[in-house]
Image (cartoon, rainbow, N blue to C red; front, side, top):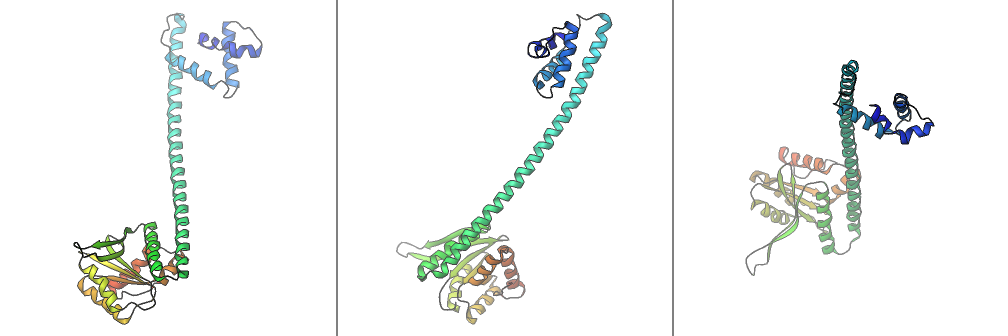
Length: 281
């Protein structure tokens, strides 16, 4: 080990201003590199590495050979224990960092989601100053589908189905959402008159022609008694349609409520109480 330590005397012993003999040099070198905190950390590690790799004891006195082997073995055991603790600490640090990173990622996602909802709210409220009914209706579809997408229930945005050649558009769906594994076709209307029975039957026709489909109707002008009756009667044909006022979306957005939970309450009311038009808040 003395040869190993003296390897570093050019960078260390000159600093202490002495020219020691071999044994004294080893001693002083060891003291010096251990007093300098982490300044000579690399050198300390290199010395320990070489000690642990040391196998040739032939140059030692017979009386010192067993003692040297024992000391080297002891150093190896200490390093193994230290390395084991170091690895455990590294694993703990790694796990803590992962936990912190996951937490920060979650916080960032919540922040982005909130910012997204704020933009949707702004665009939604701007519709109330839109004077063109057709433009307003199209924009409403876009805004509400963005809202459905932001809360993770949107399956498909507004789309049209065309018939045979020359038939043109035979069906228009304003959006499709999935809630608790059920598919709901969404119809959105913003007009002056209340939604009548014929309007309701039009949307029910789309539902009846699809297996296991249900519906959500969103109106800015309410529903006539005939429309509500048609929605109730649909339950007897295993087709559920939930009726919503546009005002409900305003309340949900203002209160920052969980819309999925809110719509679940309306669905439960439609199934259990046969009341498709309720307002939980």
